[in-house]
Amino acid sequence: MGEYNVFKSLTRRKNRMTTMTVRMSDEDAELVRKYVGFEGTTISEFARSAMLEKIEDHADLQELRAAIEADDGQRFSINDVLEELD
Image 1 (cartoon, rainbow, N blue to C red):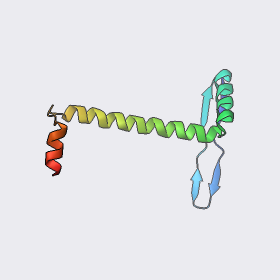
Image 2: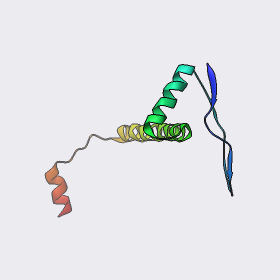
Image 3: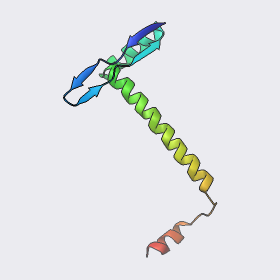
Image 4: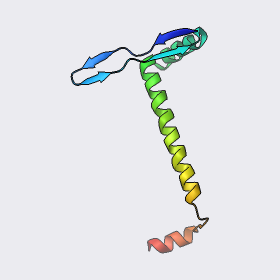
């Protein structure tokens, strides 16, 4: 199992960027390298995007669960909706 730094530490004016390390097998690391090469992106951008998407998916799932729990079962037909809009 290798350790791969996927982010470079950068300082841009007031914004600092954090360096993160990901541990994965050499086979997984090679797969990631091939994938990002094929997609024309960087490992940093791929990892950042994947992590943020995962967080967003989790938030969406929590929202869905709350909506299901709050659902009282009442449904409206399209005609009911159209009448309400008139």
